[in-house]
Length: 301
Length: 301
Image (cartoon, each protein chain N blue to C red):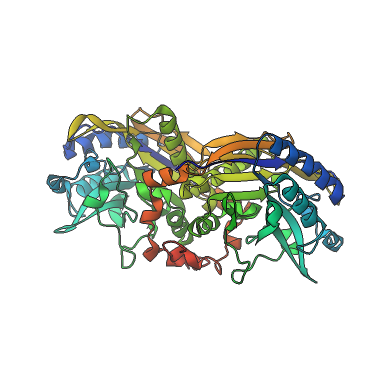
């Protein structure tokens, strides 16, 4: 039953909107990971630029690209050269006035084998994503929540805010995902108290590890690190909390980055363990699908 | 916004099927809790007897009672005397050949104000519950997942195996639960390796704390402790892992028992914090109810 792959999550600090320079730095980390044996590499959310959603500025739409833009071209070339499966994340211009936060899954020389458009879009102070991104479609060819087949298995790619929704992880699992993958960009408001910061980071770790537990699947999370000042005000900003990690199908941490350090974090994942874990604790056997109808409601009053 | 209650979870080792003796011991712990200020007390799963589901033996149906049996009478008297909200758990005989694993929610002198019949029933070596318990109804007056109104708020009571299902916690939250409550009876197979035991306990803590996170609600868990030998074989059995706990609405631990110690574990819970937590991280605002339809399917192929 054992089928082991080596996976890496890349954690980076981004200091400019010079996409080509950022991509070249990313490529260095990816090469490091591949030298250590990585076959699957996951990049953080919107890795080609700073996290521009700290403010609502129409100028930032200039950062968007068609799916087949320069970021995709760069990543496809890298994945083909290194013969790896690469999960990239970018700002997609689908049409004039219609933009998405989109992950692309690249399988070596085959190129892009699938995409995922972020389904849950946050919007709170410092994270004004509803201004920039239309949520992914519920229906159609590229609908979420649809895992993407690669040579290494079916990848259940979700993005950042999706990570708080057990529904998203469950639907990916039910569609046959072998791994759950989250490119993310989350951090602290430096003005929050340390205790509140600790609770936030721990909540974030906990819920994603719980998706592993609930579904008997490994979870890979690549998060941004470093401080990015707000474009409006150099003093305020986001302290991205890093802590990228890979967990096994019981939620156990296989590797975890610290808050600040950039780099590639690798783990060996035995995809065969999911079968064993699900035999021992067979949650899918007992789901009460006859009693879950209200999950498609907004609220029950 | 602040509205603070003091809650207790009771962790016990049970050495016999003498229900009255067990209930008297339970009452001592409940009295201790109330002396320390508890207004809400949660008992562990099937607290009046040993965990009889280690084997499939029709004799054990003798332990079952009608809803208004002696266990209910004892608990109602206790809750009325102490003027508390008490969550009890028992083996319900609903009709000949029809039994449930049922929690009853008692509000002081008012008596029983609602019940919850365990919706997800486990069945694995040592936990042969499908032999004993019919799953709770999806429809009807006492359907799950329906929180119960008490003077202290709406209690979203679920039972043990339910704890692995994000769907159950979500539906309780959407129905207006102010607290999620899990009476449980879970432990280790002593023959498992220590690393596996650690992963299991941590997975159990993680997924229940994640229900707090996903729903912005406090979570209370009362678990059994102590070793109970199998009725078939004194050497094998279950080492119940205790670790009863109360977590706040970000999943943060407010109190946690250790593996072995019996007793009442108390925490002050500010029910008003859920409002603040949900304003900061408003997951309910962004659920993709248009895209969750497949959650009522068994599997997507």
